[in-house]
Each structure stands twice: as C-alpha cells, then as structure tokens.
Length: 124
Image 1 (cartoon, rainbow, N blue to C red):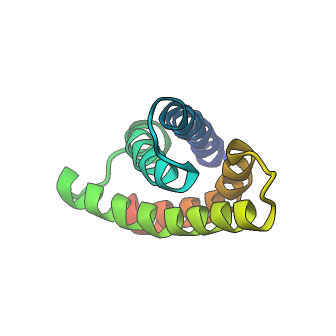
Image 2 (cartoon, rainbow, N blue to C red):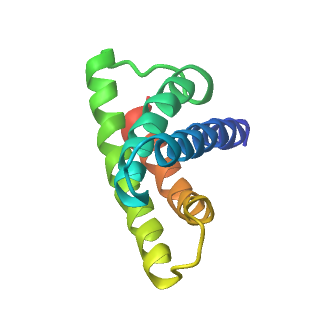
C-alpha cells in the first residue's frame, strides 16, 4: 500500500510537470494542443522515472540504461493510451480545455503505468 501511495505521489508530481509544460508550450510557442502534448508527455516521463526510481520502487538490479529503456518502453505504451484518450476527448468535446482532457487521460493511464512499472521495470 505504501508503494502505491508513493506511486500516486510521483504521478501527481509528474502530472504537475506535464500540465506546466503543456501550459508553457501553449503559451509561448506556436504549437497546438496535440503537438505540445507530445513534448509535455516526454518531459513528465523523465520526471516520473527519477521519482519512481528513487522513491517508489528503488533502482532495479539492472544497469541504468536497461532500466531506463524498460521504463521508457512502458512509459511510451501508457503514454500512447494517455495521448489517445486526450485526443479523443478534445475531438469529441471541442469546447473542453486541454488541461481538463489531460487530467482525465492521466487518470486512465495511471493504473496501466503502475502495473507495467512494478512488473516489468522494477521487478526484483
């Protein structure tokens, strides 16, 4: 239960990093909400890897490169789910704000992320 609570905390920090990056990219670049989201996801993935590695699960017995590749693989897979839900919401509900769509999509992807990270990346 403690691990899950730490994962939720890491996810919350990742969410803030994702939302801040999305807001910044939408505010200061010509990127639209779809392109900006790709970049914000990448940033959040990097942030959460470090938090999950040091707080939630502890480093795996693999080298950092292999661990990072596994984390990235799970992260990309769950980010695709996150991004598809985000896009679907924006297309289905054109008046929905991008940050609201990000919130819903992030919650959907969180369960998949925990399962993938705990079983495929930081398994001992």
